[in-house]
Image (cartoon, rainbow, N blue to C red; front, side, top):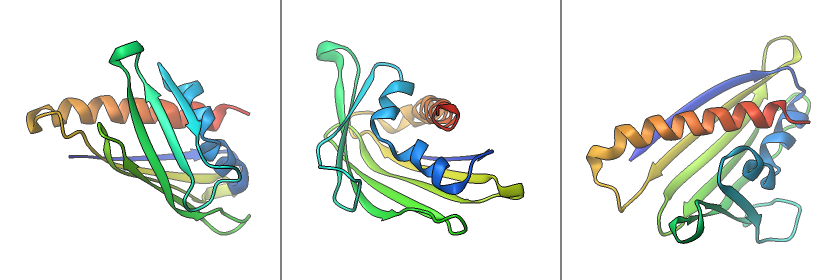
Length: 146
């Protein structure tokens, strides 16, 4: 099991930072070799199902997720979304919290707990480094994209 914690501060109001981080197909634009599909009719809500397909051809896998908490922020109150990872390859959860930061900025806290049952435990440090790097770049890019 791998635990990841990322924190970012963005010069954006809370609702805009939230929008940029929770428009799910955008994640496929910033994560290499990944396509994100939302299987549930919009808007996002508890019960929304999202599938991220990563890889090429037969070397691809699907990360199936369900939104279990959906509390969008207001201009002054924090927002929180939690996704439960229910795929065959990737299990665990992800949370994205957007809260007020200094000077009217948004403070983002991104937490992930990942388990890849097919990988032996000694591979966890490598999985941690790769995942931390990938999610960090994704958060940076999502927050910069209009």
